[in-house]
Image 1 (cartoon, rainbow, N blue to C red):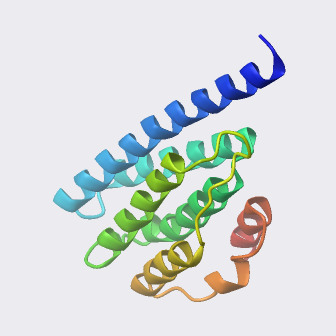
Image 2 (image 1 turned 120 degrees about the vertical axis):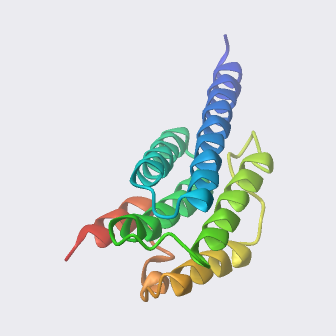
Image 3 (image 1 turned 90 degrees about the vertical axis):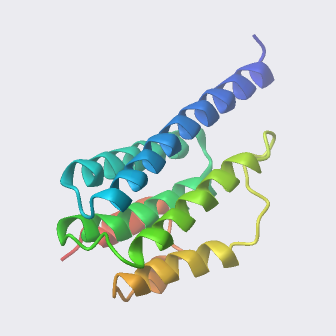
Amino acid sequence: MDVDGAKDSSLRTFQQDAERLLAVADDCMAHLHLITNDPDACRCLNTALAALVSRSALAGVDEVTRHAEHLRHLLSGAFQQRRLAGPVLPCAQACLTLLAWQLELLDPQTRRVDLDDQEQRRLLDDLASALHIAGLRDHRDSSPLAFARAAEDP
């Protein structure tokens, strides 16, 4: 297999994995709509998002990595504080829907998503607002790993 064929294959594998992980995340969200703050659904959603962050970073799909990491960071606090209810759920679902769109619109040559990031920012800001979290804007332009490190700092 030539280099281009290997790149295409690795991207297809990533996209298949990402679609599977988003389906798991959607199942978790459906469960959370039925049973608010269910610990198993929260763990499952966090695990799916963490795997998506890891796989997208390895595949070099930066926009997906950043959006999934920001979403995971915002939701991780909500999981711990049992705040996955009310307006938080539709905001989180909208962020997951955007992740699915990013996968659909991924350019196989550049591994970039040709979307204006305004909607992504608005959706993440809406989720942060629903969770009563400030400071997302401070991390928005950081790399996913820098964002993750900043999120872990006390």
